Image (cartoon, rainbow, N blue to C red; front, side, top):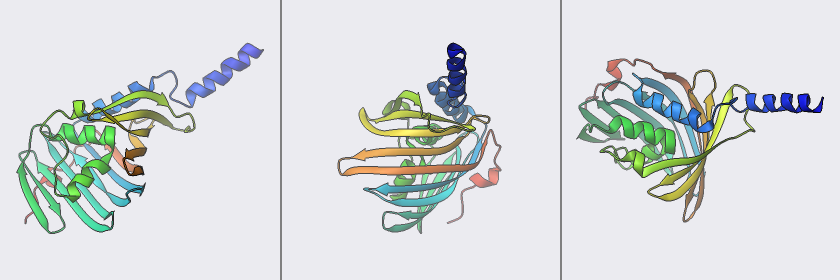
Length: 228
């Protein structure tokens, strides 16, 4: 009887943390799906507390052949911000308030957006955009620059989600601890909680994703560069 009870308990534990699946597989399946998908649409809310504070909401859309639209509105530090990055696949435009910058779209833009999102979270490239800087490593090499490791389950999260924990390394330096909650049925990201470490202290970031559509085919109008 004891062995049967123990077995039932273990089945329950496994069901609450992704069954027999490996947490690293859950993470990499999501990342690969986003890299090869025909499109993606989602809306987000981000809050950051600690040594740096931010509160942003907006949307991300990815299409074919480096079509990207990233919007963000809210506060970053003590500043109010209104951010927009649009690429039609050949040209990209960054708009920060009234400041506008046009660039050629590099071949690695889509990869830089996806890897930045899955590994570091959206806040990193939104922070760059506040300074009119393009997505990190969009010219290439992003997967070598930022890496993830030591995947495990966060067993405190249950229900219909798998919660994967991992460590974040940027340019060879340990940079944070992450919990990424993924919808078990759709495989879509739901919540990301991250501790980012700076010499001055820690920043706590929560990113919530909603209305996520992996494999979406966004309207091409979303990727049309807006007029000046």
